[in-house]
Amino acid sequence: MTGNGLRIMVVEDDFLVASKLASEIRANGDQVVGPFADIQDAIGRVSVIQGAILDVRMQGGTSFPVADFLADCGIPFVFLTGYDLRQIPFRFQDRGVFAKPSTASPLLANLHRQHDAILLGGEDSLDAVVIEMLRRARHLMPDDSSAERLVEGVLLRAIAEAGNRLQGPAMRPWLMTLLRDEHQQRGRFHLH
Image 1 (cartoon, one colour):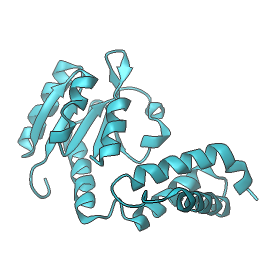
Image 2 (spheres, helix red, strand yellow; image 1 turned 120 degrees about the vertical axis):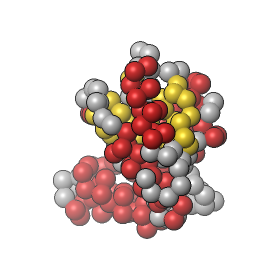
Image 3 (cartoon, helix red, strand yellow; image 1 turned 180 degrees about the horizontal axis):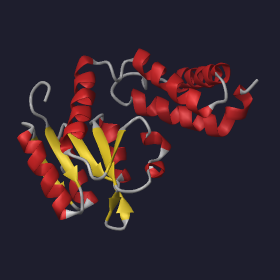
Image 4 (cartoon, rainbow, N blue to C red; image 1 turned 45 degrees about the horizontal axis):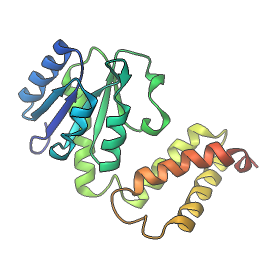
């Protein structure tokens, strides 16, 4: 474990998996919040956590509403799933996704890295966000030039819409949403 222990939320509806994760989290020196088998209960406790491990499939639904809330709050999280990794929506592709069965160790290492990056200001710095946007755009577009034009289009749109949006922790999710929207709505215009 790096640094001080974190308060880690576990959102998992399988009792045995949740118990095993909780035990391993405590052994790592972190605190467990939960485990929660109910999404609304988990969302109600977000204010006291510093990271989260989310099972993708929850009681006939998904944990994506929790993930959206965590992303909006700037709280690190990872997914744990026994299903196809392609089920993870585009907006979460930069998050850690771990296949079941997994020990808690790699999940916690990822959460600690995310937390440390936030403390250092690296994850939400404009430079870091633009680099991440370029990386994502290169996966979306057929070549580097069109990827760069896509990101340029996003940044121009962001400047036009900004007001005070570039201040505060919501910058990263906002710009990533703009990237997704720009690709869906105008991606073909950036090809040439």
